[in-house]
Amino acid sequence: MAQQEFREQTAARLLSLVEPAGRLKAFVGLDGFVDEIIHAVGKRDNAEAYQRLPTIKSLGERILGAAGKSTNIELVNQRTKLGGNGPIMANALAALGIKVTYVGALGYPVVHPVFNEFAQRAEVHSIAEPGHTHALEFDDGKLMLTKTTQLNEVNWANLQTRYGRGQFLSQMADSDLVAFVNWTMIPYMSEIWAAVLEDLETQQQRLGRDASPYHTIFFDLADPEKRTPKDIARALELITRFGKYFAVVLGLNEKESSEAGRVLGLNTNDHSGQGLSTLAREIRAKLGVNTVVVHPVDAAIAVSEGSLSAVDGPFTDKPLITTGAGDHFNAGFCLGKLLGFENAASLILGVTASGYYVRTGQSPAIADLVKMLRDWPKRRV
Image (tube, rainbow, N blue to C red; front, side, top):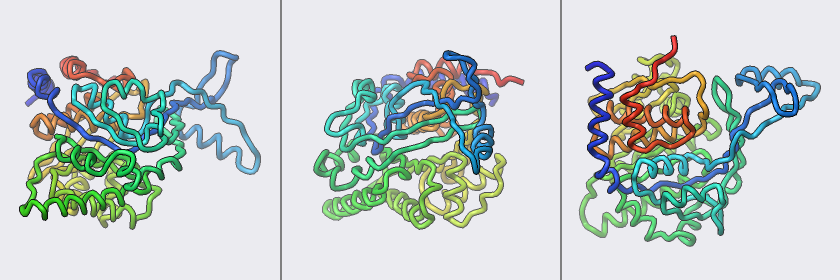
């Protein structure tokens, strides 16, 4: 099937499912950040105008040139917005019409004003102060400079006392989608998962029957490079154990797939499309989860048992914003899976949601996805 025809079929199918999408429920957590989107100044022309450093390489050269000396690098805030993988993904799901409940670090005891609009779209519960990110954006990527000490408060004890253990488990049971993201930045996330798994096991024993995994649970490690291989291995083992109770989806960007692959003893040297497809297959086989998704910048791959799908994204060489693009991909992909779409159609919804966001800085509604699918951006030659 031609790509244009495939996109049109996906758009038509999605448009017919707006009402069912509005009945879906998602339970998302557990991080939260205040994001400052920043440009680094290369040359200032006057008080109002400057030329920004266009690439991470150019910033690196400026920094290396200061070794043994000193230098000043001016940072200009472009916008301040809600941040964190959880709030961005949850906000995107809410924009798509899904009923969202969010628990995380949005400000405690008072929710930080940056999350006020999100709180109008979703039911939010905060148990800790948010972290803070300086997101330096460049044409060839971004640098996320974070302050995360506040996220030490995101732990099982505080979840129980500030939100409620019973309520937490009830939300997991009643939601079509559960999403735990940003494992890397939450030091006690593995302990939370272990506690939840223990309660799920106890609950299953009390019911006296095996649980059938019918709801979807989504995990995103979120750039685990700074965590030890032992920590990453434990997180992956815990994610695998959730497969007894849920259909497990593990989402990885290209860098994260390499980090997970290395911990699992896999070959991570081939970054071609074929190499990433092979790596995705092998990660899924090692973990035994339902689906592994790998999304490099301009494409996306999904592997489930017996099938592999890949799609190209609506690439743009001048994005308005890139921080949060992966979280929007995750929201679009999960929407497709919840609506019963096969992996290929779910992937195209993911790259469309991400593509819309990086062009506009806004989270798309379903109507926006449909419009973009039917008016697909052309890659410049």
